[in-house]
Figure (cartoon, rainbow, N blue to C red):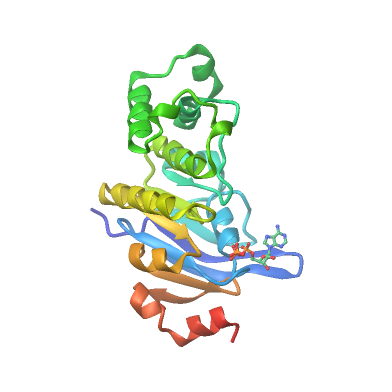
Length: 245
Ligand SMILES: Nc1ncnc2c1ncn2[C@@H]1O[C@H](COP(=O)(O)OP(=O)(O)OP(=O)(O)O)[C@@H](O)[C@H]1O
């Protein structure tokens, strides 16, 4: 297996008017890791996610994914290349059933849906994901009728239709109950065990400390610490950033 990083963020900068949200920010995500991106409110985590996934254009810097520079970041193209993400507020097509959401996510769009021409392979993958995520009994339920936690699971399952190499999870456990947190953690661990890399923005430090290695800490849009959780959490700069020092 190649040792080149799966994702390289090189000297990214993004300004919103007078605010420099991301400031000369560099880090890497290695293959086979569950990497955390943490930092106090407003430190630039979501903006970094939006830059990596092509929802925002950077003012400066470069992103390299899987050995190739991402010259024109575009969410759909990156998805096809194996980079997928979730959102703080889970996104799904509310009027479509749970299975139809997976069909759409497979990348065949409305034509496959309208003509029910889902390939056998995608159909099998969709059914397997419904089982894996305990959504099988909601197969024909409109996504709009799911609970918030179930929507998070559906969003997670849907992005796995593309068989991604790297999954970016934006606050996966925000607003869900402890049982659902454990469920989401289990899915990350299982997918990680089968080779998927993760980059997580997460405010639940207990989860970060037990699930993620390395942990990258942002403050003021730039990386102030990086390393194993036990080391990062005792770094004075990190403590200062969180305590507003
Ligand atoms: N679209 C925007 N327009 C103007 N300013 C923005 C925009 N998006 C983010 N910012 C600013 O950029 C900075 C970084 O915001 P960002 O949301 O990336 O931080 P964050 O670390 O994800 O915060 P949180 O933990 O609260 O979600 C903040 O000062 C924020 O107010």
